[in-house]
Amino acid sequence: MTNRTSLLVALLVLGAIWADMRFDWGGSLFLMRKIDGLIGWLAFWR
Image (cartoon, rainbow, N blue to C red; front, top):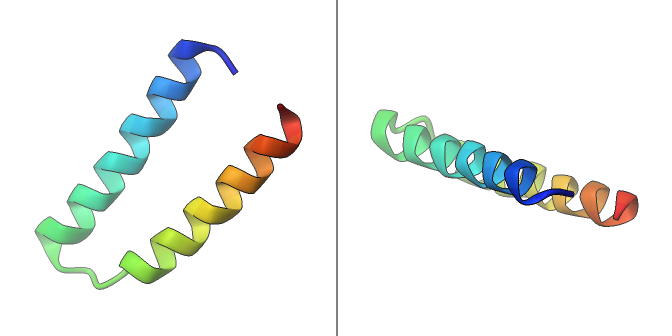
């Protein structure tokens, strides 16, 4: 993964967390589970 790609992924994750907090969607646990799956998937392809 290049630095540019990792920065994009980090910004997307931070944006999703911000939106969850801002609009009170209550999806933080769901989001954390998906992020955990994403990290596992990225680690596999590394």
